[in-house]
Length: 251
Ligand code: SAM
Image (cartoon, rainbow, N blue to C red; front, side, top):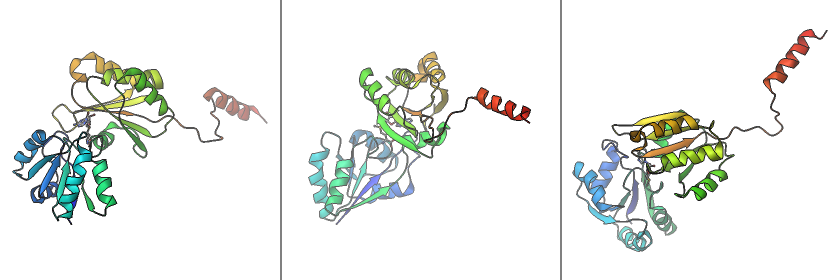
């Protein structure tokens, strides 16, 4: 049987593709792409003329059978999305699950992912993070979604559209407070790559001060909530000083 390769492609800079990805995309019998016209540009750039097949959110279920037949006939398939790693806020999950269920091989060809790239430059803790993906577009639903992760201590990672980035940060302030440290990482790997980290209120000011600051592709990161270990008591600095003074003056 053939193998299904899950291949990461660039998130902006066309040079961000691995040697192995190019090799696999050249060798497979078919490339399943989200938007074949979009992917053609990347493939042309690398002189890859492998047959393309459209697989997107709306036909993923129907394509499963076709792809399964391909693999069972010994043909190999590469799945790519418009940008970055397939399945990460992109189609493919149902395909991978279906192939694994019948024992077909699925192999990862790793590469760029906007969430991981943003984490690597935001300057927020990375030991634990929660990828939340896209928030709901409407304010009320977005605020409830933010409330659900209000006390999460891991760094939160969201994808957001340029249309909504400022409103979204305003909702973060509303739900989590103006002091919560956040980061916006935009246009990663592109000419205007920018990362802005600070108190949510400062980052919102920055977004609002210039239309250019709100253009492009965004990853929004929110530092996790401060945690108190169970049984820990918060000691006010003034109380601490009082104890120190008492100790100094006590016989
Ligand atoms: N599968 C992709 C990945 O691995 O990152 C994500 C696909 S999702 C449909 C697209 C979203 O990813 C954009 O709306 C944006 O939030 C984020 N994104 C993609 N490329 C980006 C870039 N170069 N800089 C910042 N964010 C980016």
